[in-house]
Image (cartoon, one colour):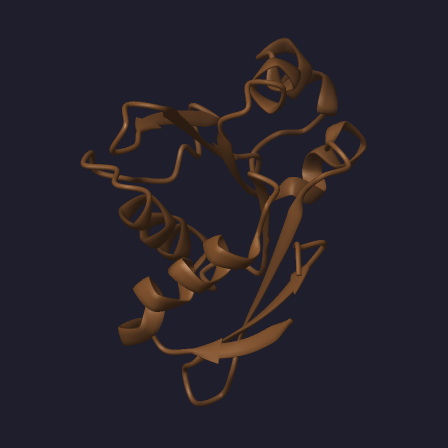
Length: 139
């Protein structure tokens, strides 16, 4: 599935992605500054997160709570140098938790990723809009 959105349409875009996706592990791919964290903020809003959402660039993971007090984990593996660092932080336990896992820079831990995920590939267009290509989603 592919679609385009502008910043003013980001909440509706997040809602659309959540509606077509059964797996709860989302892999956000895209270049630096393309809007991965911004889209994750919209996901969190749709899930009822009341806390401020920010990229966990240095802590690797932030935990938020949805409207029903369920955990949502937001990962940023940009600064990770070896997959063992993710193993040391217990990433597999997060993946097995049945909680939403929203992962920026998943390519840095590609050998640790579970099979059931949704890939969210974001690219910026010349007109400032973003194009998303979803892969591995439930139809």
